[in-house]
Image (tube, rainbow over all chains, first blue to last red):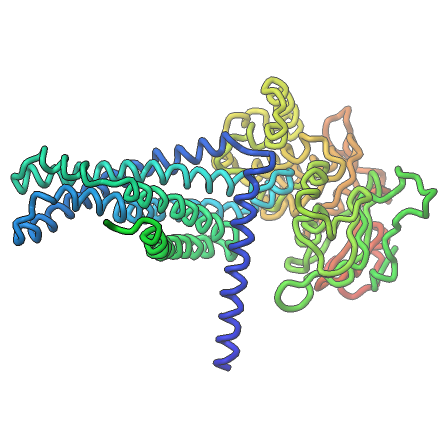
Length: 260
Length: 284
């Protein structure tokens, strides 16, 4: 009995991974063949990008502030509180900016995509769209996927900037240190590999958020309860996979760009 | 009349190469079976829809009526058997190739399936918008379609502000705007009050008698089914009128499903005189 249950679970996992891979492949390939729905891309860019700006800016600002508070306390023990700016900017740009932005956007948009598409599935709107001769993958999934990738890139840049600003605010107002020194340390020690690391990660996170959100939405079954389940799965899996892929990407990128 | 087993009467797929295209069935099912998890949802189902014919698919809830309807335009795929839509085999056709074929059909879903985020105008015009038809022409055609279902005043409203019956009528307008060659009605009167149901049936009848569009209508309401057989739409009076006593519309015929098997295929006369136990129980 137990063996059968394990076998069934394993098969389900393999089947889900296979379905997800095919789903993602179709969503990406749709960009290379007409029809393309640019209006939907712009609408989704507005919903994902503009809609998530406030939470991304606030979380970035306070994360930078916390980093400055914590690092200044530790660095002052070694007489190195002057490098707070370098610490905050490198950490924000290489790691915390991309990951936190990804998780914040996943919480807001993967859930929204899964619940919106899931509701459309259970009320037969997706079937209606197919019956009207429109491919829901092209119309609903592909625009969300590419809008999420593009917007996450810009949101990460904003988050990095506000994180450094938050760190600066704490350094000047609360730690009473020199603001110019903070900014010059933050700027001068940045290298292109740091920026490349920080901008490659959101491309993967954006893909994960939209593809997982849409995937769970489109395979919703079981009415409104099923919509709730899809939404939870989308947020949980996208958040965990963002952190997991961040780990993998960091390993790979550190191989290409070893620290000085 | 056809009675069990349905597979004993395979769908007429034309009579050889000389068969006139006009007489070819719009839809032909041949030994179609489908199973999800558990027992088969459809088991060896064969029937056809001729040009100008209205088929009424009867049966209690959960016997596979809606599934059968979704097989007709390829929203679902059969495990076995062949399905011809407008003469083309769709059971194995790719989704990409199915899209243009589906635009030749109109489908009215059980709960309307209107797009909540779009206005009635954009819902009804959905296909036209995708085809980039000019806005002026879209507006004119949407008004015409909404007038057909007597809901022109809802042009700018969102589906959320419509009643259940109004949503179904908008769904009918959406299905008809592209002048389909086949209409699929999935329980268009389900869950509606008798007056609204009659309004919907009158619209179905109007489409049948004015435009002669072949269709299949799924229902478990006998009253609606029989009204379609015993009435015709009078264009001059603008509403349906009963046929003479004992008369029935010859192009409106019946199918009945029982646990996935087609147990009846015939006219209203055959239906009411059937000695099949399940048919009798259903009618009584």
